[in-house]
Image (spheres, rainbow, N blue to C red):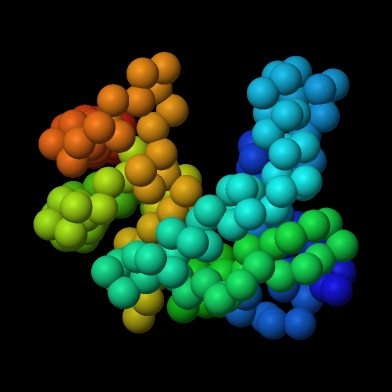
Length: 202
């Protein structure tokens, strides 16, 4: 069993820990929500189900997606371990860290643009290449928030990485009609791409 102590980042649904025996790796652990802390019965029940049936957890789902899409998205996403790891915090998803030239964790897309004052235009070709790859290979994602991209400074140049595969074919709409056809899924993804471009003023 792996004992986790060093928190790298805290999100709404998962906490990211430093892998204690692999310097260049991190472990994603699903948060154990409580009714008092979250205030939403759905999140509490989802967390309870995931602990009772790990196969249906977000980490397990993301790992299955990685195994399915790793070759198609090579160069865009970090490396994942082939199986979930057992930790004192529950089953974890181990991934290679995305690090800058100075060995610091790479910034999210939003933080990079804010902190460096860089123009989003410098990342436009990489974003376009990524989205065209998704469209060409019919890989439909619906979650392109600014924290799902990292900007890795490699040899002094910003390089875009995509780090959250959970949004693959995951439609949280009240009527998830994008499941019905690739045409509808593509339309929805294009709307999400346009929303991201608007947020970063591209």
